Image (cartoon, rainbow, N blue to C red):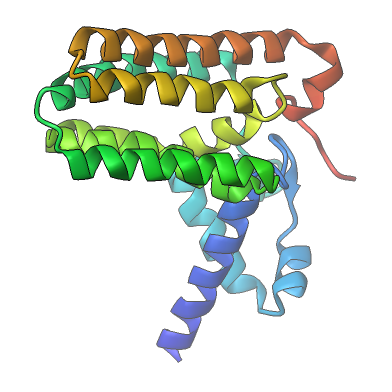
Length: 228
């Protein structure tokens, strides 16, 4: 019985988490436990337990009447995350450049090709999962477990921001070009150029997000969206 209950909670957790990250559940949107339970064909208890877990992870917030809602985006929070990324990931890419092996460079190239294929197929999930993999693989190669653990804690929030960037004109296509530039500097063993290209990539994403927050026509993406 316990095993079944845990399995149902896990199913609810992963389903809701996916919908939050890919923005099918909008920031600020009320999460209706009974409605979700009916959709998943399970009882309300595992759904509520899943939401408590997601609340602990910062993807869900409390709402009035002992309800839950999707955690909202704030520009300050997003900028803080990218400030951390810029400092830690640019350090990692510079360090990796002097030690990376041909097979590892090929793996980064393969990830980039997967991103290109995903773009052609309009496969958002594959694209953003591959984008995350590209960055995480560089961190993994750097070998600093503390940095790896710090950034891993941000992965879910970062993925939600990545899905947000698809609404920035040209950003997805530019991400591929910028990754290719980073990879080229890595191939040439030019640590300083790789570091600068990495920072440039993240800065451009930051600028795009700032503009998105100011775009009233896309305000629904980042402001509370409450279903009656």
